[in-house]
Length: 346
Length: 125
Image (cartoon, rainbow over the protein chains, first blue to last red):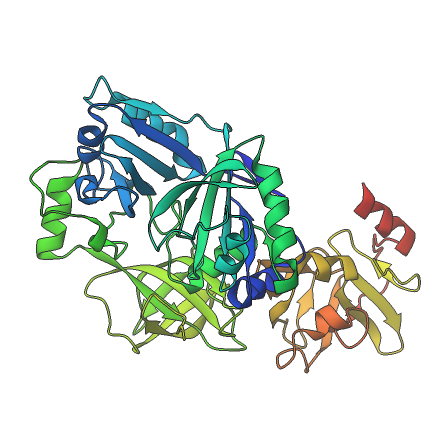
């Protein structure tokens, strides 16, 4: 067990590698009750979110969700989150455990005085069902005749007769779902999913596999690849900063400038070699002998058999395929620039 | 957890087997199990003089990079040549083919190592 944003979470259940492989080949079930669930409701909810988030919430249709950032006045990332629209003035935000209280504070300070932001830490349960068999497993718990939600959408339904909110999304690079319910009912759904998935090879998965899976998919972790000192543009996630709308949001001018003229730093993918020391968080990165940045997240990829990493470096970024080095315990290890999505999906 | 009684142990989860060829060192069954599948090992150079408690090797799994400490003061005389090609030996046979290095301990030094029983009791506390 380790402390993760104030929550005690298991690093692994049966073993990181087994859990990682189960998620890639069949299904993995992750306890994400630590993730904050914030409901924004009431007149002014949309306006409040529009004034704070980088992706435009007004563009979401009912039932649809997208990835977005809550930024500070410098354009640095306070939190990265998923925003779902349940109604014209009704939204669900799924946020990082470590930023939950700060997010709530920022939302509640926003101009709107009639919108309500609810969802204090520890009041909800959440779980992520991920992997190629996720749909087959979840379908067995849905009411007869009901189908799973489409990619990046959310439905309110019942599992085993228990009200649950189900979104088709995830943090592993696989198809899958995030399921939200009350704290009391969470364990019932958890056990039912494991039971239905057992013949297909489902395993409960800990934080270890969650990290190796997300990194193979090139997905960022707040606190490592994102922070108050790193903008979405520098993280290579400018796609989720929508400047086509007129309304300002914190750090908009800085982000607009960076998008137009290029940022001072950028995030690249980096791959090591089999049988070499794997890249890890904090290791310096060198190009032609000169330090250009450091690794923000790195792991020996269980699927690929060599190290994969995200690195924050000064621009201009070297081209994909170019040779680099990173430093491990005083020794330089060869690596190459790679697209950040490391896995080739069939 | 397998903890052979004919070996000596460090609190930091290394084992030492005293033999004719000097001391052989590896990591315990408990340590390999906690680390998970080992993917990379970095070993000290032969001939290096090391002090008990000094970090002299690294064993890496998907989960983490873990420091290995010299269990005694002495000189490294040999390293396991098969580990670079097959680091998983550490998981499969931690007390046999998964050994890390051999060390010639300095004579006369008092080494504070544990018996199997004492080491096992540090794990349960």
